[in-house]
Each structure stands twice: as C-alpha cells, then as structure tokens.
Image 1 (cartoon, rainbow, N blue to C red):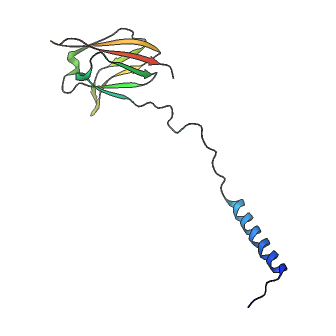
Image 2: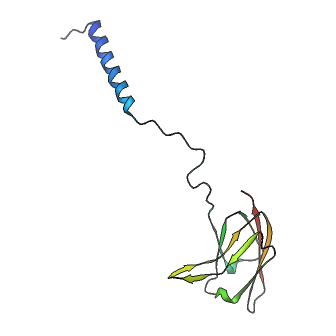
Image 3: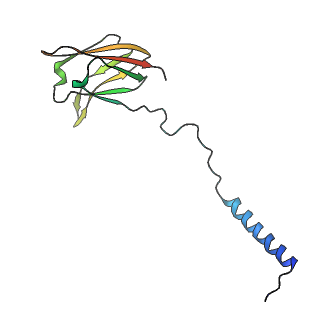
Length: 134
C-alpha cells in the first residue's frame, strides 16, 4: 500500500490548481448577454385574403406590411382608395424579371386610415388600419 504524506498531497493540489488556472486563462470568455434578440426590429407581415376583408381593423407598427392575396382576381381590376395616404400606402401586385410581387399595404406613420377596395360589380370592402409608433 502506498503512503501519501502531507507534502505529497499539497504538491498534487498545487499542480492541479496550476493546471486548471492555466487552462482557464486560455479559454474564450463567455459573451455578454444581449438586451434584444437578433432581428428584434423586424415585424412579421400580416397575410390577408381579399375575400376576408369585411370592415375589420388591423393594428400595425410603422414599417409593417400587409400582404393581400386576391385569390385569382386580377388586382388590376380592383380600385383601391386610401383615406389618409400619409398613414398607409398601397402597392399593386407586379411581375418583374420572373419574380411575382404580392399586392400590399405599407404602414408609413402613426395614425388611422381606411382602405376601400372596389371590385367590378361588388360592394366595396373596407379595411381599417391603425398604425402605432414603435
């Protein structure tokens, strides 16, 4: 049976402490936690079908987009009127360079606006928009 003396025990502890200190000095420090998540300023678009527009109110933040799916209706046949174009703007669907762009609304500034969609032979459909500041 091997005998360990107090001196040997101290030497072993000293070697272990030195090794662990040396290794920890080479380690990369943990990154500081961030206050917000990556992409925290990005707001998801809202998807809505033209057939579902029926006077509802959507709350948006400045910069947020509403994608409008016309479901086979040619959006060139839909007239769009906006009560306050400083609050929200409309862009029609487009096809450019083999890329399809959906029709949509973009929240420009805080306030309220009513968007009226009129399709030939149908009653107008209204969508109320409330834009909040971030």
